[in-house]
Length: 307
Figure 1 (cartoon, one colour):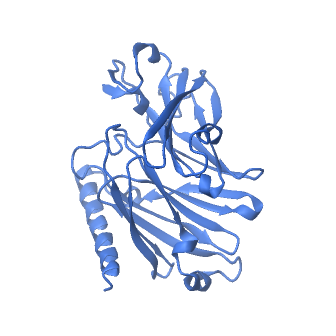
Figure 2 (tube, helix red, strand yellow):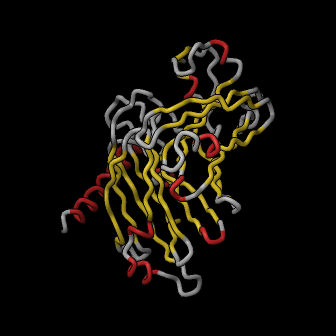
Figure 3 (cartoon, one colour):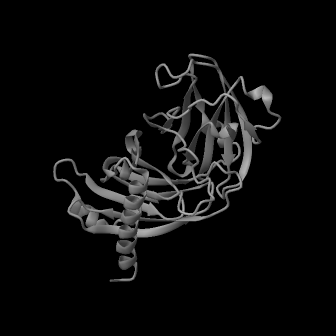
């Protein structure tokens, strides 16, 4: 197998300076799939991108010994380069036994002993200073936006976890990353927020540069009168469904529900709709996903045209 060692195990993460959140990542040297492979030491690296998607620096975070976990303070590192804007960083793990075989970790190498590193997820944690924290685990999907086959990377995703109140704020964060360092394509992401009775509260499209992120402030996008109408009389929360799609690229989408007044953070990622509904055959899954994307595209295009 020929690959970049940086792509064996990686986790792209948004740094959200504009929200006042600190970012840490927890990385393990243990295989989460019991019995698949023995624990070994890993070298941890961090790639730091500018708000415009340019690679600024790649740092060696340190070694994770066998049967150990380490928590790295990413904000303390990234804010030295990008003190106030939002931007992307990526955590990488490389088996220490492979590190001496390469001159530059960016270069593709042939790995003779192929191992399965799926499910080696990073624990991504956000917190307010002096507040609580929220975390979620995920990893880079295989060959994310690697190309070049047309249609191989796209998005269809949903969540029902966006909530708003006088205290709670909700943000959708879109991550546009690629395992191909030469990837240079901007991508358009269409989305809609619906009330639970099916009414569209807000819809739009955004275009995001490669190796960039975009933050959707849900409370500023949905009209105030709709938020007020949808509030539950008991807890004061207004909840909305979210659906997003892209024909251009695969996006990773995170949901932040935060209460700054008490330093509370709740964090989750959206669900790929097809994982619940699609059959086992790959060709059937692709057909159904394309059909669903086309349906949402027609719905949102009609709204944009005023029909």
